[in-house]
Image (tube, rainbow, N blue to C red; front, side, top):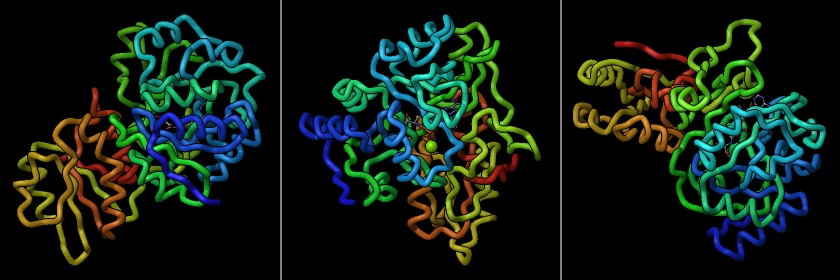
Length: 338
Ligand code: TXA
Ligand code: MG
């Protein structure tokens, strides 16, 4: 299949909407990462997403809408959900709600709940409006690769597999949306993102965080979110993350660095001057900058043929929880406090 990559504009958006209406798959930007969209209510279209991504069929998709009226008849919108929508939609917050029979089982991988989100990106909004369909969209990477934060990343993973990529530039947030389960008594974050547990608790009164957010699943433990079961965000090279005072992390990174194993360092901008002439990438200075840059850096280090990655992390709390959840998985939980 020929893949077109077009700048998002009136005519390319119309073309994208037409493709979606005929059951095809289109990649488009959101504020978090690029998505791989298709009609959420069309089984064959949803299957085409799984095929293009090589995604295991037991991993459910998020349904994207541009207005909450579109949720009518698809899921049970609770009072808490309504409050959270008032506060954070459009935005990087995905909610799990009980689904109706109109949402096919392929979309939710047979689960009784459906994940819904309203993205805060003009291109995503325009596309959703133009096709007037609820759009199922996972991140537009091939399964097991870092999520794409630019059209070039989508091209690397999806060339020849889908008809159209809409290019809307680089994603502002850089890690995927927060996934919060609203089907139980207490809202529970299954995947941290830019909307923090604190921000959810501020609106919903309470918010729990699933223990698997910052540790591997235990033997025999069921994943609250199927996505957590699968290997994620792993660069080709083994990666170790160090957390501690700048001086100490800089010392460890300098000591660990071994050019003969083709090592690469990944650290905060402010640490780079302390690392000397070693090959090092910047994660910016704040957790938000780290989140925006992380997936791009993982792809760059892969492209460079890095043999070993030593990285500086943040304490996994507050607004650093999202970026650290991804770093922990990229490092297969090899995290060292120094
Ligand atoms: O920011 C994002 O959320 C991006 C953009 C494109 O919107 N999408 C995204 O989709 O990250 P995906 O498919 O890569 O991740 C969705 C996550 C997976 O971990 C999946 O297991 C979980 O949400 N999920 C979806 N529906 C679920 C459900 N009904 N119950 C539990 N987990 C669910
Ligand atoms: Mg994904």
